[in-house]
Length: 367
Image (cartoon, rainbow, N blue to C red; front, top):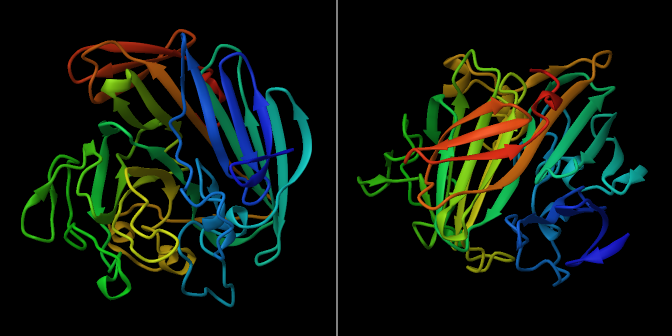
């Protein structure tokens, strides 16, 4: 264990990846990938990481990606359960129960809803990818959950998602100007393309390019097109000549939240300095309402989309997730398809350019 950017963390590495996982909250980051003779670090670490701020553990350690159970703010209790923001999994100290150079096994015993969560972070030789598996056991009752990946967008990112059937801007007040928070999108607006999302001022915003809308915080959510057995999220950085992408089973993680954090929070610890951060959060939830809000009826649930799972103590929930990067050729822009290929996946762009990433796609257990 080593203190990395303010947090005691466990490290794992292979020939092309080095990753750190915090003891507090099990947060994955920083992570570096070797692409030829270049080293890239796409995941975000909060600017207050080493300031020792007085805040929820999840926010103190904020970085990279972490598993949320239950996902969301959890401001409203549910049947006597009052969870912290993004749950105990994002706020409590994990215990290591096994490690090799390229595999780390952690576990956490939860107390608010008693049970156990196991985390495995694995690397593969030659793969610029992270294979992350969470197993939830011993719990019963409804539960939203998911991943909370955050990208550091120092240059223009081109955002793409696999086909979705439902898209909506957060329907409540995401930020309160009285408290120093500002949003730009039209509350509750529906959309079917990231390129045309209604703004609060009557205009239209293009969410397929980021950073954008400086001085604002916004949140939207989409749910995957039914009948698919592989879903993906991708952000291409043309100036840096690489693409970051995530892969999941949409029957387990049903939707994706895009959180645009670009200086719209002026209260501590954000203080207007959290900028150019894109949350690409693959989840089963209703927006970021938390447990109570995800169980409650919503526009998405009325449309038939799953916003939580009913956990069974005799049948563990397994959530598999792959995050990866790949080098891209000049002219490669928005990803339009990620397809299984021999020994990996092939990514196709709107411009017709392609790239290949070696992956163990069959690792996604539910496919």
